[in-house]
Length: 314
Image 1: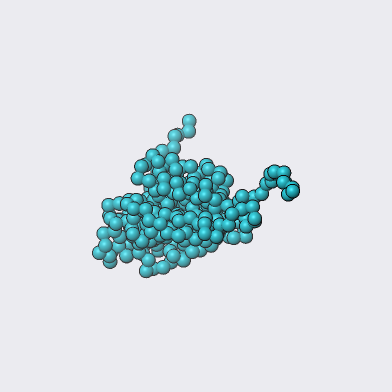
Image 2: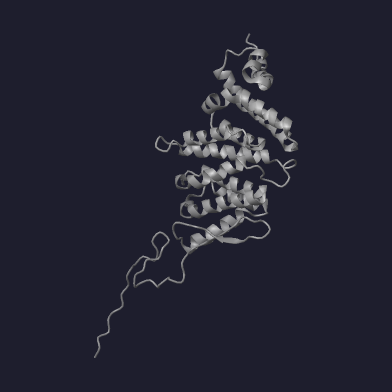
């Protein structure tokens, strides 16, 4: 008679970091690879493109990623805001972070290509919230993220109606996010702030750049802090604004007149406190005009106004 073996149980790994190991205990998965299709950002009809991801993820993570990204571009404002806000607190994002960064970068690319500003806004909101999440780090993806963010700042046209739509605030938001990326990830080994500052400085020196792009570059430099303003922006303000005025005087494009006013407002607002701190020897309107040219009087009144409203000491 054959001997009947007794029943027994054992344990083995079903998945290891999202991948099913090829052992006899697990079924083969040759025809069922867990590669996700990341949706291109589209509010009218969500299309799909194959995202390039460095590793596979589990089915649960795949479903989570799809649900999260769908909500982040939802037309329902409350649904979208809740999903985007979750990016700043969810500690479980690390597994889907590579795909999430691809989603954001592709979303920005599509938004810039189609001049769909709301695409860009959605992607920047997602990135801004990811920056606030203490459980994740974005170092591995900075080489793709930073060029995308800078493109949002300097691209000539990011919306269909630039005279009517507030693309200036979107560019400013991108500049703030760039500053956040630099401050969080700047190290002595990568010298990220120095490299980004140098790149923006070179862009500022290009005399053939449009005024809209100049605004974006200046917004980025001013967001990098007082040291960047005092060493890069302030010494060049006179020449920068003279170039802006010459460009505006010879341009037939009405957007350049808007850009001129935006650049003036930006420089005065961002540089006034730095002037007050680093150039205390400037005391009169004439001093400011000699130092900063046509923008000098605006700078003077911005610097002096807070002092004139200080309460008198008794």
